[in-house]
Image (cartoon, rainbow, N blue to C red; front, side, top):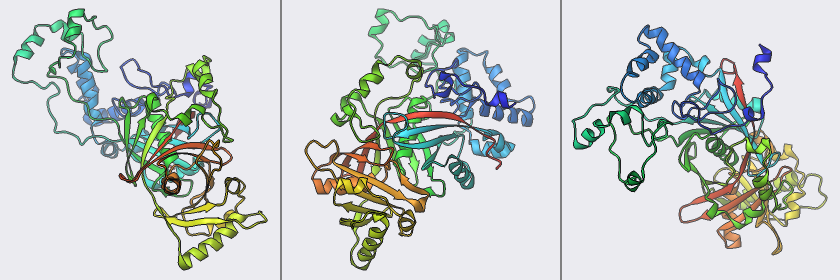
Length: 500
């Protein structure tokens, strides 16, 4: 059994593949039993679990048997698609509880590890993203996050519309002139010549005369149904020790997974989180920032040739991975820092001076100390070198009452690639130093926009791994737009964790 589970994967089987399967659904190239299905919204194995449970309960009245009965109707492919879509709109969690199959549905959970705010492996900030049939318990998600032991683990659940009232599968309506025209071509109906993603691959070619009328809206056939929007997800983030309200790099990682796996057709995703609705969108190539032409590597130095190398590389490791390569823009709220004054300001400066100084001989010059509404402490230091050379005493940092400490400084010189640099320390949250912190830029971005008098900036988080963040601050909307790239470096399956 061990050999069957821990088989040696091929190059194509370890990357999430947004390709179309035999029945027109997006798959994950992990194994034949592990697929992300954009139509059913469950893995194929989980779908089978639901069907078998219903079959055991209902006897001969199984959903699968019903599908076979409906298959004799015109346009078999469309009918089966609607049957599957109807099942996907059920309350999966309620169904799992009803048939006592929670452990079975969670026995294999697809995940990917994605490095965010970088364009290469071993850079940026790694996050694990788990794609769930429905939200797991808080305890289970915390245990999974502790098992991954990364700065953040994200849990992704596709949102579904409320289940509609039960209606006949084939919806009939009064005959119209449009219907009579459609009825005159029963062959076309049986061949499934629709314009949707489930059109028959053997559909006849369209003539030039029909091309001229292509823009004319085609009346919907009675069996066609408007699909539920599939670009909305619930998203939660956990460190190894706690759940957090906002996380930028794990949101970018989740968006990279969704786009690369082909889970949505739209260019924008909506994430429902503890910090409200956050959006992630693909950045068109026409909007690519000039700074992005020479993306920064893990040491903070640009490599203008890296993009050309990736485009011309035809090796199997690159060409076999249909991963989204473009920038993604996150729409986050401004999390402003207000200056710490009075007794609090004095005590904070004293504590920070002792905690951040570490083994440095000279005292740190702090030009600003403030606390954000997200309970982060923002500290502006004298120079970029001061930020890069910090060797903080983590025990003393953890003693400070804050989610984390943002140490930042402006860069000097017209030739600098960046407008400001930063580092983020959060031992109280189980993260001694976070490699790249998107949420911290919701605070440092507006701070530097005000000081530098500019709304668009390039930031570099100068941790050991390093990461590049393009920041745009919109004070009128109260939003911070963060742009970056992400790289998927690992994909797999969580096994037998739900009963732990």
